[in-house]
Image 1 (cartoon, rainbow, N blue to C red):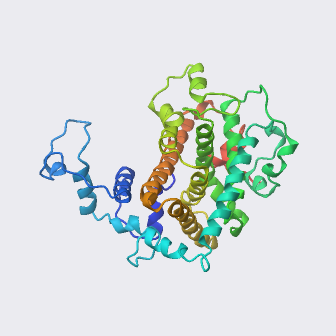
Image 2: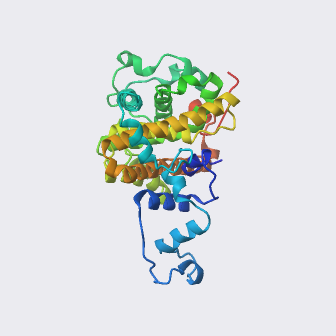
Image 3: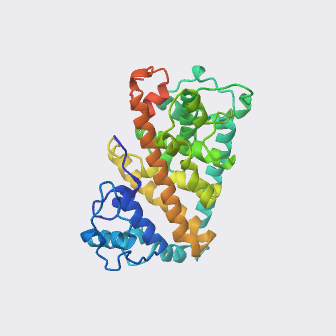
Length: 367
């Protein structure tokens, strides 16, 4: 089942009208960008009277935005973010908070968190190039969460040279990488072990896909390329598989927003932190875990917002909207990945790739 989409994040703090993900994304981008449109028919009635041929789409953004508002979607639910509804925008509130450095710990905390996660991502980049022997590792989630960090012991491994891995093996490596990233998140220690495992099950696959895309972006690739030089699209072609739009979205266009927006590493690591907590399913968490998850979502949003405001207040809304859209892309691509992997169900060897079974297919081993 597809995990809760990014738009549900704000529902933790505000009651909102039910909406499809497309309209959620459209509405949020319009509000954050302060956009205004003119009706393409000049009568502001496109959605009522326009007759469409089968399969056509409404292209009038003015009427679409009006319909969103008519259905009860509220601009303040976007601009206030997690605030309690005191009439201030997120920007106003944070500027008020961080304008007093002697009394506010916001900036030092953000700097410390960004530094920690930035270092984690750099170590993961090295880890993905190491000669990790998966057969020698107990890759039960519970074990991986409690064992010493691979990132602290990179000197024990050699960089891979000429060794090619198949795509399932690369996915396992990147699932381990995503767990290593999660272990560095400031709030993760506030969850008990069983809740940590549930968080990993919910979020790990999406973080792994994000890591693949981000690493390819920093290596200046236009498609997802693994550290051993494997171009995923080319590997799929070599296997005789037709490259349809799903594969293009999974391994090519996923990089488009990264190259277009030129995100910094600090923006990306804090966005990954927020992504980890916002897509986590609270259904299987303990009562304390659910409470802490809400706190972690709020703290992650605060962290990202402070970074963006201190970078450039004038670009805050546009930048926040772009990073929101990036996380939506990662979530959407994860969903496509799962569908593709389930289509291959008859051909996969169950439990051969234990970590994939746990993080993608929700297999729950007894130990």
